[in-house]
Amino acid sequence: MRVAALQGEGLTNTLWMAKPKALVNEFDFKEAAPQGDLHVYIRPAPPAAIPTPVPPAVKQLEVVIQKNGETVSIVNVVKVHDRASWALASDKRVILDGEEMNVEQLVDTVEFRNALAALQTPGVDVIFVGLESYPTSDYSKSEREDLSHERARALGIAVLRHNPTRMEYAKGALFYGVGLGRAVTPIEVNTPQEMRQRAVIMLTVSRRQTKDEAISIFDAFAAIIRTTEIEGTNLGLYAHSQDAAERLLTDPLDFGGYVPNVHETRPHPAGVKLLKREAK
Image 1 (cartoon, rainbow, N blue to C red):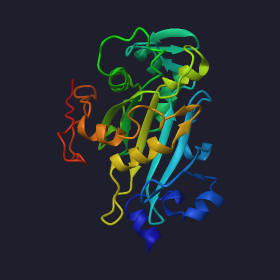
Image 2 (cartoon, rainbow, N blue to C red; image 1 turned 45 degrees about the horizontal axis):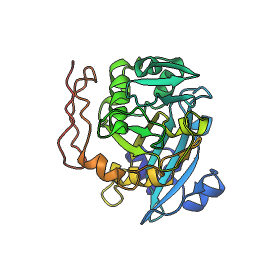
Image 3 (cartoon, rainbow, N blue to C red; image 1 turned 180 degrees about the vertical axis):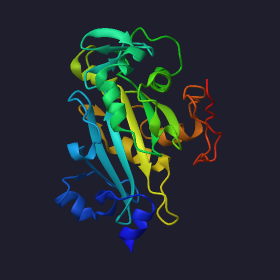
């Protein structure tokens, strides 16, 4: 009956049906510290879990969130390019292999396009994450209140404007941006470790939609942020990591006009103002 119910929701992936012991023993997940009544299991995404081949520079984790022993969310955490970081004090420029470029140019690279293609799951929600490195690194930062917030928005707009895959999974999806603020760990500027603190990060969240085991994108996001480290970028070690879900809820970025030929029809899960998207 459980299998039939999951298939009725279009959730045929065996991970949706796996019990906690099976996730660890059969699927090689590691259990993170519990987050309230949520249990988080994390592993590097295996090739079989990725529909489109992704270059080695793209790092991807697979996160399963369970409540009462049942899977309520499966999340892809993607470091879209392991060698790309935001340029110091900039929300428009990134650094790739020592070369500075516009964020739009990064989005146009083959590796980035392949990463996006691998995330084309119908109905997912997409979160663009903005990060800043430890305060001593962004020495030339302007007086803007939150550079990480601006980075999240810039990445979102670049992807939605310029995505060669035409965002085929956008129908029914919601797009968010959130800045996690500055990293809290002191580090020497322009070292590989410091550049990882300002990495380019995306999340895609596929939630279980049932009456008794529903989980909001905000609950899923909070659990992910507090438990996930991907290739040296620890999402739990930023100024706003602990209240990231609240920031996502109360301050959604409006990407209106950047998704061509897509109109929002799905109710916002939090009941806050809809993110209007109209054809540009």
